[in-house]
Length: 131
Image (cartoon, rainbow, N blue to C red; front, side):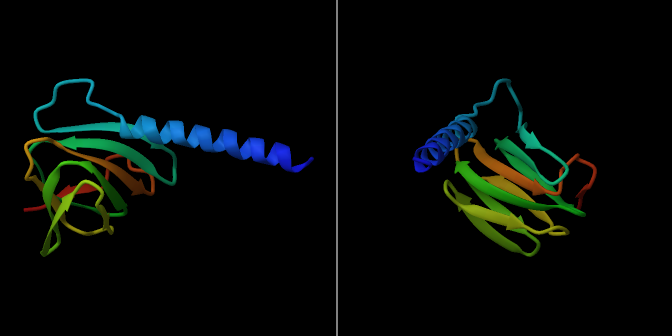
């Protein structure tokens, strides 16, 4: 009989996780924007999670003390990672280690929509734009 409470807890937990996952995937812009829109999903001292929409591009920059993980939800783009260029599209995952110069150029008619997870917590203080 001890198994039933454990199974119930698992089912409830899985349902809550699925609701959170669906909510993040279904995020849509709630305001007009020219190029980039960022919505914070979660943040604590260890990590920050954002949904980001990009219509045109992101200028080359690096993060001094942050690693960024990016999962592409929609769109297609060219991503610069130091001296490399890669093409990303829906379903792709990109890891951007700290000190890596990165930039984005959108290649699709629809905005690029990504989930960005940055560790440790991102407060916008270590983004350095480069030429």
